[in-house]
Length: 65
Image 1: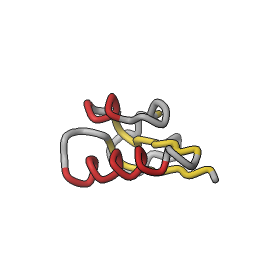
Image 2: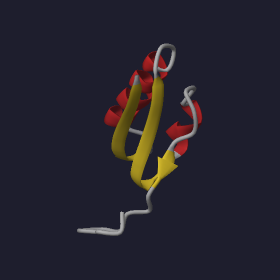
Image 3: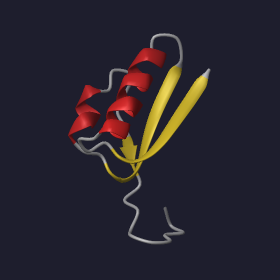
Image 4: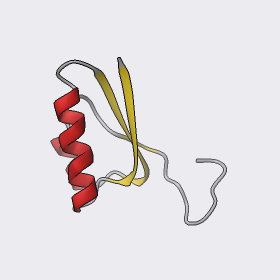
């Protein structure tokens, strides 16, 4: 199964740690991708399923993202 998690960033924080932990647990049996809207952050290095990608979203509404 392909799973995509979308988050604002992978900066140091509780929700960001949950995204990484869940992605790593699911990667053993599924194809997992993590998309960061604004920036990657240091927790991106902890992902085992593959690299995170970022969209470079600007503040507010950003249709390009």
